[in-house]
Image (cartoon, rainbow, N blue to C red; front, side, top):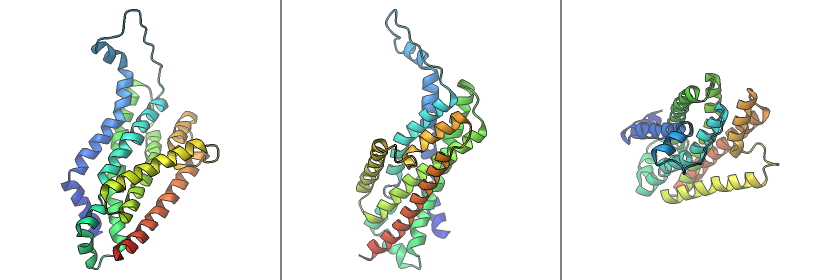
Length: 254
């Protein structure tokens, strides 16, 4: 708990509790607002040639939610990776980690304190971002219940938890933050590619969480695939966290 409080205080001093939620909020509302006001935006920048008719589809709330999750899955994940790529690797490279571990601090507590502080930051920021997006969706596109908002936050939060845990895993393995970011992004891209190629075999792949969230919103009930995919995502995250602790113990002794 002492290490966790230290990490929380450091995140506050680094202004992560200020700029990161603002970034997530911006990404969450970007598509809903721009999609609704697209005709006005086009007119303000010069409009279309004479005779051109712009017909935009009438988006449903679930479709707009998926737009927001698409932004979070690309730019949001990138921001998370860049924000956390030096969480452990930077301290290992500078020697701070060795100074901390000289004291009666276990490898498990050191890694889990870093992980938990990032998870809390990401989950609170995700809820704030989706909450603001939910507000605009209800005003501009139609009703989306608060229960649906909680469902989206929980299941998509599992995907971001996996991303954070993957970053922590590479942090315990490599001392170069830039390489940590590269390997994390490369791993996510490979996972996405494998899911696309073998999608009919990998219905419960974590990369399909957004698709299952959309299906559940359309049917108004949590599908079996969504629950199963969420469970698989939790299982992989736990395995990665355990592997991170083991890897950190081995690499710190080298």
